Length: 230
Image (cartoon, rainbow, N blue to C red; front, side, top):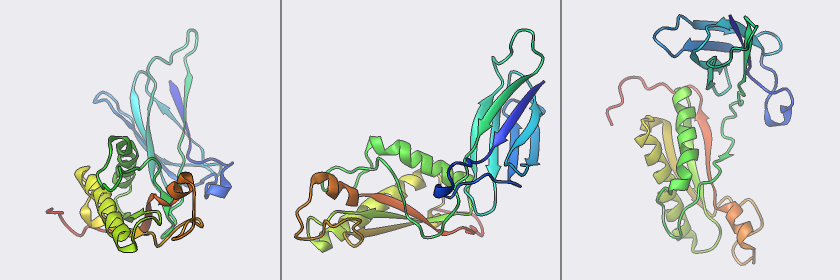
């Protein structure tokens, strides 16, 4: 017999919108045809879930709660047996981020070559994670935004940022995300996050802060209403 504990959130991260989540839905699925495990339960007041699973198996564990991003992970009971013990414990913690509509979230490590809008290889891991988030949360519709620094003309920066935002949307569509859930928006230099506006001398690091790609949830209850024929 093996026991699996799930704590879907971190009680030490209140400033990030995180807290122990009671009454969260946790689902555990055995990933082998031989597995008989398919469990759906609710976390207790401390956000903890415990169930019995089978040995030598891989499992997908998913936690969800209304107004939070669903999250999942793969855990394994393989090679966990200890001599002289009939019961072992497999632990996993899942963090659920609260959904804040129209609050920008910066996508780290999204960089572009000078004067280009192509998705570079070093940006793909971050975008793959975003694609996974969208697949696990199919009712979320987001805006993908690109921002530039103040160098260059306003009109040029606007056009460049729009192309860059669209390239992110195109990448996510290539990962089978419904195009109707994605809006590309270029803001150029309209939303600088520091003092580096036109005519102000700034370091390259300060300019880099403004050259960012972000997303925000604009609808948490999107429904496709049918088949996507794109």
